Length: 150
Image (cartoon, rainbow, N blue to C red; front, side, top):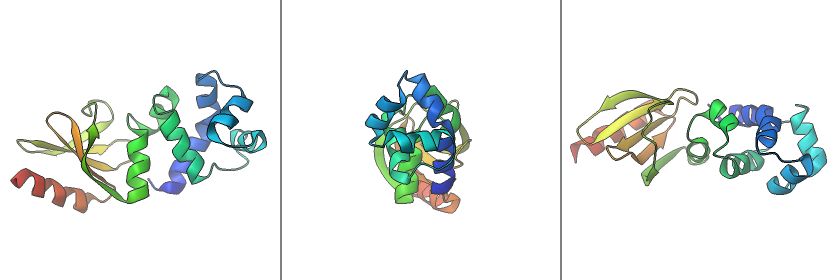
C-alpha cells in the first residue's frame, strides 16, 4: 500500500464512516476541517481526499468498524508507517495481531507479522508492544534479527 492507495480507500469509505458516527455532512466537514462542498465531492467520489484529511480520518475515527474493515485494526499505524517509511520503537501496545496479521517469524521475545490488508510489516514483543513497522520486507527482517539477538 502507498499513500495514493490509502487516500483512495479512505475517500471511498468517507460517507460510510460519517454515517457510522451519526454525523451530518456539516458536522463531519467541521471535524475534519473541510468545507461541506469538499466533503460532498469526496463522498460522491468526484475527488480524492488529500493526505492531511486521510490522516485526520485515521486519527479521529480509528475505532470505526468501516475503517477497520478497509485497513485492519491499526489505521493510524499504517498512516505513521507510510509517512515515516518506517517506525522504530517501542511505540505502543497492540492487540497482538490475532485477526489482521499473519505471523512471518517468531523468536523467544519477538514476533514479525505482516498486515493482511496493507501488507506492511511490524515487530511486536510477547506483551504486544510494537517495536518496528515498515513496508520493506528486508528492512523488517533485518530489524527482527537484530532485536532477536539481544
